[in-house]
Structures are given as structure tokens and as C-alpha cells.
Image 1 (tube, helix red, strand yellow):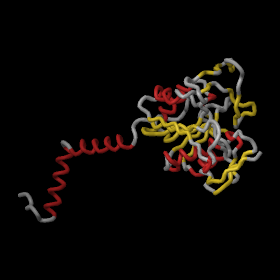
Image 2 (tube, helix red, strand yellow):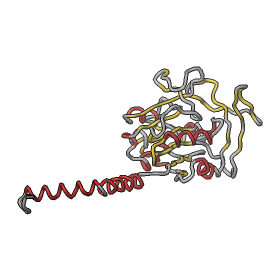
Image 3 (cartoon, rainbow, N blue to C red):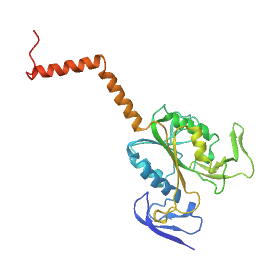
Image 4 (spheres, one colour):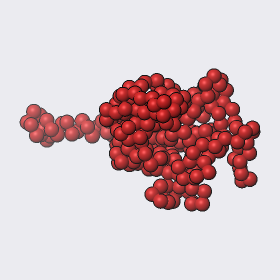
Length: 279
């Protein structure tokens, strides 16, 4: 049975029909124009809503696809950086148009990125706490992390499903793999995240703002399971930096700065003939 919904795709922005030949919309409810899937459209909607000036920012995407919102960000963001985990390529080097990076140990400089983003990557990492520590380290004050990852319905506490070390992958139960854009064997699932993920993020980045958005909107083709998008904003946004700049300017006007300012004002008055020249 074919399932169809009319609407406007938030990625290609065309009037379109969202179509699926199965009730499993998560991976098979395609946009008829750009062939995107629901989580990509949910991500695009949240990116436009919460970070509308993303095109002018330094944007790093971990493990991008060659379609949908990944393709659009790569095309439209002037400072886009795409990266993959290439096991045999030194970190920080370019390979096939992408930078070799490990989200748990990034090679970017401190305070050098405006946005970190990834779609369905976090359930495959070994140390999510290190991932958030590294993203926080490399983000500029007030920077953003926007991502998708499956949240298991009814699950209150996050559960580790596997570990990864120098000896390989150790599963705690039935092995589970998801697709990987650079590895036909897929990526092992290391975590099943629960409704406590927002609290975990706050423990990893104290003081951050964490939004979990769950859309259910056939008009933009966001239906089915695992629709959550997280938008994390790190401490130190534009308002504190403006206050710091004003404070520095006031400091400069005090002391010698203030005396210089007064001398300049007196010289202007002398030129205009409002006071006599000094004897």
C-alpha cells in the first residue's frame, strides 16, 4: 500500500508529495523532489528555525550523506567542513573531499567552529561525554550543536549496548548495526538513548541550553518513529560578549583614555573658536 502526503519540503522547499511504500516512514517516506527522509527534514526545519544565519557560519558536519540536508549545507554554507571517521587516515588530513576526524578527539582549534552537526551519529560513538567535551571545546562562545539520534520510546535511562576498544566491538546482547555512508558493513550501535539524554548533555556541558524538538507534521513530511532533533547552545552568547566589549571600551575611556578624550574635545572647541588659544 502506498502512503502519500502533500506538503512543502523544508530541504528543497518545493511543493511536493511525500511517498512511502511501507508504514515504516523513518527510512522510506521520501520527498518526491529531493528524496530526503523524515529525520533530514526535521533537522532542516530546526536548523532554519533556531539558527537562521547558518549559511554565514563555520559549520562542521560529522558523517554527512550525499543527499538531502547534508548536500544543501555543503552547497550553501560558505565555511562548510565535512568530516568522516577514516580509520586509516591521520586525523586532520583531507581524504576524498572530507576531513578525517574523530568526534571524541577533534583536531580543530579551540573556539574555531560555530556549529557542529550530525544526523544519527551519536548512537555509534564509544564515549558521548568526550564527544560533547570536544564539541564544546572547539565551539565559539554561544555556538550550537544540532543533531538527531534515536530516542527509544518509553525508555527512561540511556543504556550502553556495546563498547569499542583496540580489540574491536563487544556487544552486550544481540549485535545491532546501522548504515554507514563510508562503510558497507555499517556501524555498531553502542547506545540506546532514553528520555534522560537532555540531562546527560547538561552534565557534559554545564550551563548549556538544550532543546529536544519532536515534530509530527505531515505538511513537511516529518512522520514516523525517531523524529527527535536536539539543539544545544553553549554558554556565552552574543549578549555577554557585547557587555564585555562595552566594559572594555569604558575601561579605555578611564584614566589616560579619558584625559586623551578630553584633550581631543578641547582641541575641537579651539578649532571652532569657542575658546581662546592657550597663552
